[in-house]
Length: 306
Image 1 (cartoon, rainbow, N blue to C red):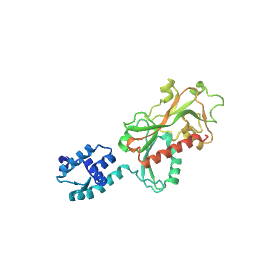
Image 2: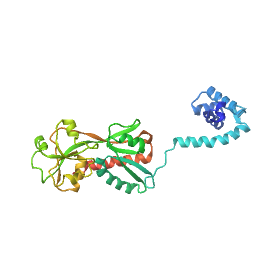
Image 3: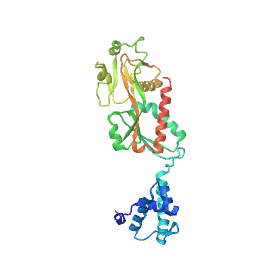
Image 4: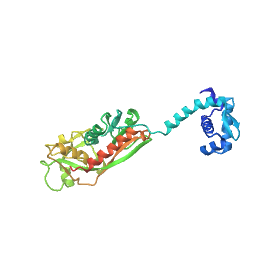
């Protein structure tokens, strides 16, 4: 610590001094600073005591700077102006010319439908910006935020670090994905549903899924995979059923013309798909720009018919 701090040199006193010098009187400075006259006078006395020399002298009803006061004013003013400017000015950001690189965490259930249109919008509005996309899901989200310094994440969230902002983008809706050539026409009842073999997604390599955990029924699971990415290819040409979020099903249907979404034969509410970011990035303009793009892309994707 600089020895002058031990001499009662409070930097707020310099601000009072500069305002007094500008106003030419204690009364005028007190009005500008929203302080009482005694408070301003006391601040000047403290500053002069710390400096060790008089800074102001009376001239009629007003005050004028001593030679030491003039030198202090010339030195202090630009620094104080710079501090005020730094504190109050908004950081400059122009998406069209920005070259920021941002780290985006995406769950595999969101990457397929979100990333292509998001990159398209970035290419149009911010061609110089770069995205580093990292895989996240509810089990790994906390570690990803703590160790990989994510700027924003989109996933189903559970345990999140303290100081994390979270915003629900939409409520996931489960549907049954099936190849229409291998599933009988008519209403898919629970009995028919359980007659089929199933493919489930399990991040920990389990053969149980949300249906078993929530409904307490046991499906005949033929395959368990760790990602939603290949479900369309797995189900196509088989009688397998996959119970998945509707966003995953829509993406698979776009790639495979025989796939269809069927209403699930039971009540099962999906978890909200959330956007998450650190509170420390709340006012970062580049991160705010990316978050707004994510909102727009999500809204458009949810409005498109399957």
